[in-house]
Image (cartoon, rainbow, N blue to C red):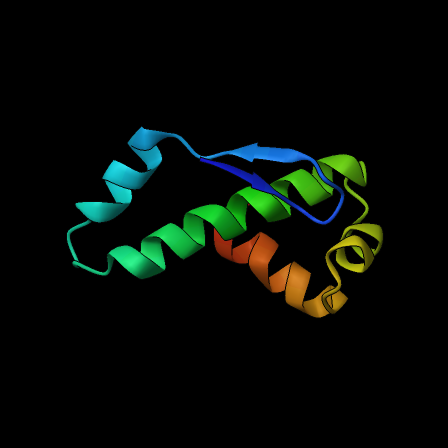
Amino acid sequence: MNVRNSQSQSIVITVQDIQKALVNKHGDAYQEIISTVEKAIVSQALIKARGNQAEASRNLGINRNTLRSKVKKYGLV
């Protein structure tokens, strides 16, 4: 599946990503899929902003503190 973020960059989600999400041990496939997509989008925004969290948060249209919590949640540094 190809997802486009607000800057029209492609983010690729593989079949393996979806399969892994569907068979997670807690049975919460929806949340696992959302988390996988969110992590990919945040990661791409940080790459595009060259690690600048303020710029990445502006590009995503979210508060900088929200971005920081997502970076911490997904272990993106």
